[in-house]
Image (cartoon, rainbow, N blue to C red; front, side, top):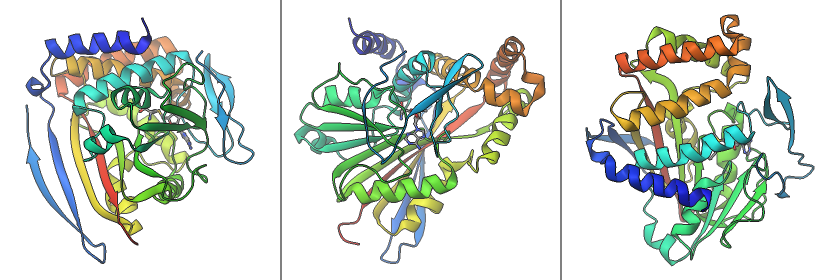
Length: 349
Ligand SMILES: C[S@@+](CC[C@H](N)C(=O)[O-])C[C@H]1O[C@@H](n2cnc3c(N)ncnc32)[C@H](O)[C@@H]1O
């Protein structure tokens, strides 16, 4: 049985046991109204419910997806790529699992109104696809559509993959290896730890260049300034924020993307921002699964965290501190807010 099938069985079993409507996550929609001058007024309504394959085609000119080892983990070593996380097998496993957790909390793989088009057959880009789990899942669900995943480092499958899924390496903050107006739908998820503020502007310009007029761009990002954060979790996040600021990255990019990056392009007909609260170690199975993913993520960042907070130099001590954070998040009912932007490119600009 393949990895995807076994994970899917697990997810189906999990879904039967845990009705998402019963969990205490909430979602909220912000709709930006676009007028001809692209000024924004947001009409807000709130609804509350309770060692992988490393071969693959490369595309940017002179692009070399190298790597290095640090503190026993494998990291990118690529010019102009600032990504924080490792790219070894443990991290690839984490990203696969994370996909199913995110899909469950979000209630699906996308929010844009493109279900019929996907069934009929369209061309889709998965920008910063990681191991390609979203594309592989979507490729199986929509056999008439074609999925192209790009990532800085080739942890995606190169040979054993569905016929409608294609992957290649490139830096998404540089020129994408696709012609203008090529894709009907573009999906990008969790690049917060990969893109500097300048990278975000360049990447969004490129994504809009390769998106067809009338096509949809969907960006899903988490805000790592948490709601109801306790002092222990704050200490870990403080170290991560310091590492972010040294690279000109924003820990609150998720909330900035709509007003400061997407809307000012002047290229969008529609721009929606859906806010979803992810519970951290409270609220039942969803909260504990998401915590487990988050905790593994924090441990994967140990190489960075210990540089910013010398008290975290010892990995075992850092891990036991994360156990204290777990209890604290339960007590404080800490949440992480995610923003799902769904934007339609104007027919003519
Ligand atoms: C947290 S992972 C998310 C992967 C995938 N989008 C998902 O949600 O499962 C972020 C991915 O972005 C990739 N990445 C970071 N910076 C990048 C860049 N400048 N160009 C292309 N990919 C990049 C990393 O290699 C990593 O695979």
